[in-house]
Length: 258
Image (cartoon, rainbow, N blue to C red; front, side, top):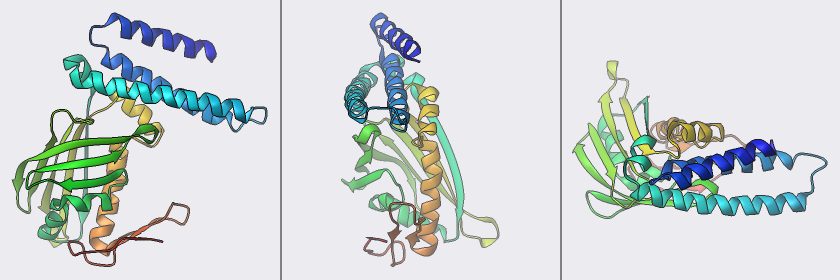
């Protein structure tokens, strides 16, 4: 295992040093850092491990990971085709909400509502009618921020957006609202494209760790359905707590934990 990890690091180093635009290789190194942290995590369960040495090694790798993520972001931002085009991943999800399209659209259009059901989204500050500032949880307890603008809007039908230049996370997407057949509410169709570390390889690794945005998008939409239909997000007793919204969506509400 140690030899395999060493060979991986050598390959990443050769790729970084031999390419004029090495962003993709740096993100591959980040994926390796995450694998190392996962291996260290399993070592804590060993009865023969020394907790003090493991804690020191984990802290060191976490620091290296943070530096690699920062470098990857900088190189991807400035790296042109090698740092951006090859790393785009698209996710599409849909579900039906048993509420009128006007109500569903109105709730989503108030962007400050999005953190109520998007688990990793810390806040959305609406700067004006078109622009907003987003803050979300990133890997290794980092915080990711970006500015976005609405590029297309049709009331009760469509909202489209894209991140602005210089953002930590490049992304674009659209959400469409369509009346469901038989008057059964509203069909919500969401499409998101984002820059993932090492493209589909990084997305696959993140999926194994429970952090893949496509997987999280499906869970966020299920919570959105709960908020719209019942006014609250319910979670199991094993979770860290539920979010409760007694008022109807679209009205002022106070959130609480239970």
